[in-house]
Image (cartoon, rainbow, N blue to C red):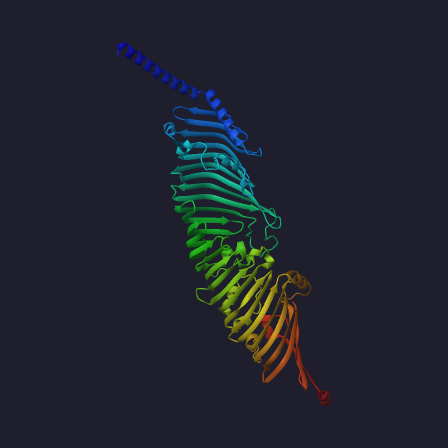
Length: 619
C-alpha cells in the first residue's frame, strides 16, 4: 500500500475522531444549557402526562454534567379526579453518571422540600393506583422495555423538609427527615417535628379530635430507636366525664394530654416480623393523674401475634411485673377472635397512686398491698384467675377469681362483673384502720371491734350501677349469711341476713342479752339530696331507713324467748322500734329508741305485757 493511501486513511480517522470529540463537547454544552434542559423537561413531562392521562407540570430543571447533580422545581401531578395529588417545591438528586450509563443508577442523595401529597383511599382503591397501573406492563407480566429489567436503582440517603400529607381525613406533617439506606433497608433515621391530626366519631355521633406529635425520632444503625416528647391530645368538645361527679376519676380517653419519651433496642426486623426491647419508657398526663415512671419489656410481633416478655411497669410507688404476655390477632380463616393472656402478674400496689385517674376516694389510701393475678381475655371480656391481695403482715388476705363480660356489645348497660371470694381473712380492728383511709362515714366501730377475726366467703356482681354482695361472714361472736345490694339509680341499700347463733350481748355491750338466732331485712337511704333535706329539718347523725327482723330464739337474763318479731325505723335523728313476743297466755312487747349507734346500751326501752283471760285463751 502506497504512502498516499495511508495518509488519506489517517486523515479520515483524524477527522472522524475530531468530529466525535466535537459532538461530545457540543452535547456536553447542550445538556448543560438551561434552555435545552427545560426543552427536554417539557418534552418528558408531556410524555408522562400522556401516559398517565392526567395533568403533570414541572417549572424548571437544572442538570450539571459531569457531576450529574439534578435540581427540579415546581413538580405537580393531578389524580384522575383533577385534584392536586402531589406537589414538590424542590427536588435535588446526586447521581453517579458513569454507573448509570452501565445500568446501575446510584443516587447518593435525594432532597425534597415543600412537599404536599393527597392520598384518598375508598373501598380499597387509592387515587394513586392509576400510576401503578400505568407502569405495570402488559398482562403477560413483561415490562414495556425489556432492557429496564437490567437496570438497578439504589438510593443512599433521602432527606425531606416541610412535608404535608393528607390521607382521607387524616393529616400528617414532617418538619425534618433524614433517612440513610443501605442494601435497600433503612439503617438510620433522624426526624423532627412530626405531627398527625385525625378524628373519630363514636356510635352516639360524638366526634373526638386527636392530635399527635413527636419532637424527635431517631433510629441508630438499625439497632436503637429513640423518641422524645411524643404527645397525644384528644378533645371531644364536651365536659370531662368526671364533671359534677367528685368521686369519679379524671381519666377520660376523650380528654387526653399525654407526653411520653422512650428508647428501644431493635433486635430483629423484617417485612413480616420485628423484635425489640423497650429499655426506657415514661409517660405523664398531669390532668388525669397518669405518671408512669418506668416501663420495660421485650416485644416481638408478627402477622399473627404480639409477645411481651419480662415486663415491668411502675407508676410512682406502684410496681407490677410479669414474665410473659401474648396478644393474638383475629383470624378469619379459623374464626378466632382477638385474645390475650399473661403469666402471673405480681407486684406492690399503692391505691393512692391511681386515685386521681380512676378513683378519687382512694386519695388517702396508702397501705401497701401485694397483688398477684392471672389474666386472659378476648373481644368480649376478661377472666381474672388466682387473684390474691394481701398486706405484708397478712392481717388482710383476700383470694378470689372473677370475670368481666359484655365489652363486645359496646353498651355500658350490658357490662357485667362477677367475682367469687374464697376466702377473705381480716382482723376487725384492721378493718377500722383501713376505713380511716377512705372518705366514708364510720358507724358502729365499737361493735366492729368485737367481731375479732373475720372470715368471708361469697361473691359480688356489678350490673349497670347496681352492686350485689352475698356470702357467709364468720366472726369470733357468730356467723351471718347475708345478701345486700346498692342501687345507684334508686339510691338505696337493701339487704337481708340470717344467723343461727350470734352473741348479741357482746356486740351491743349489753351483758344481760345472750345468744340470738334471727333473720332480718333492711332498706337504707343513700341519696345525699334526700338525706340533706331531712337533716335540715330533723338534724341527727343516724342513717335513714328501716329494718324488720324475726328472732327465732333469744335470751335476756334468765328469760328465754322464741319467735319474736321486731322492727325499727330511723328518720336520721331518732331510731324508733318495737319488739313483739306473742304467746298463748301473755303478749310481751316493748318499744325502744336511740340516737347513737355507739351507745346502744343507753337506749330507751319501755316494756309492755298483756295477760289474756281464760275466755280469750279458749277463743
